Amino acid sequence: MSQNEKTCLIRGDSGRTVRAILDRIGNKWTLLIIATLHGSRMRFTELQQHIPGISQRMLSLSLRHLERDGLISRTAHAEVPPRVEYELTPMGQTLIVPAITLAEWAVEHNPDIERSQTAYDTRPR
Amino acid sequence: MSQNEKTCLIRGDSGRTVRAILDRIGNKWTLLIIATLHGSRMRFTELQQHIPGISQRMLSLSLRHLERDGLISRTAHAEVPPRVEYELTPMGQTLIVPAITLAEWAVEHNPDIERSQTAYDTRPR
DNA sequence: CAGAATCCTTGATGATACTG
DNA sequence: CAGTATCATCAAGGATTCTG
Image 1 (cartoon, helix red, strand yellow):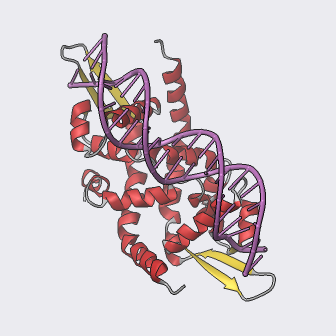
Image 2 (cartoon, helix red, strand yellow; image 1 turned 30 degrees about the vertical axis):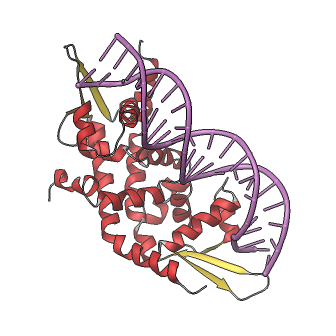
Image 3 (cartoon, chains in turn blue, green, cyan, brown; image 1 turned 120 degrees about the horizontal axis):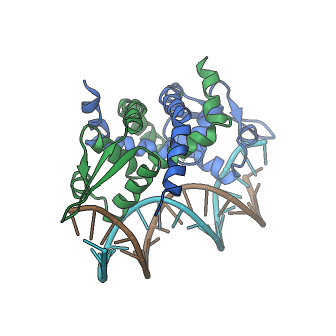
């Protein structure tokens, strides 16, 4: 299948699916949580410490969404004080691959993008 | 470099860069416009016809952003009535690769995600 | 510790009308 | 044709407070 045909994945009916995924990982914290959880299970507070600037509310909400999507699993231990651990599911781990592909593209082309933005903003008007 | 090390692209300083890209392509129309423009230059009205549901305003805004980022180029022909054509820049075309990678992941795992969501929503409470 | 509930601000998007 | 301007709406996210 050619690259041109593959863009139908984005434009065609499956585009709804792709947009749903982008809505999930496109938000402010999701991808950060997944990357942080990659390779190590962590507790709620631990996650908050590793992700500077995230509020309790957004961490909680994001974890709930990711759990609902089956990308992370939540384990509550019956102890006092409570201990809850989060980790990537096998499916969650596979998301790392396209995420890194995108990240590498971003890092590689960022200089060009910034140059273009500067040129655009300073062009004669 | 291991996959685990590569997640630093997302978690580390370059994470800002990755988030900026996600903010751009994570919005409702950007990726759709890029996919539509892949392989063929198009006029404003043409784009609007190929992207169901997009408003003039959002098409205009999105095109401006993409142009500023250097992902598409805008060519205004000196004619009456006016004719303006948009096409992907070389850099814009390279974005297709990670976009398709993500799209393929989405399509492949969507059934599992929906199953997980249903299970989550119907679990005993 | 791990969260839920509430209130508030802001940015993204849509609808509509107007124009070079 | 290819936009811009303006107004309205709505959801994402942040700050704060409370609790099992």
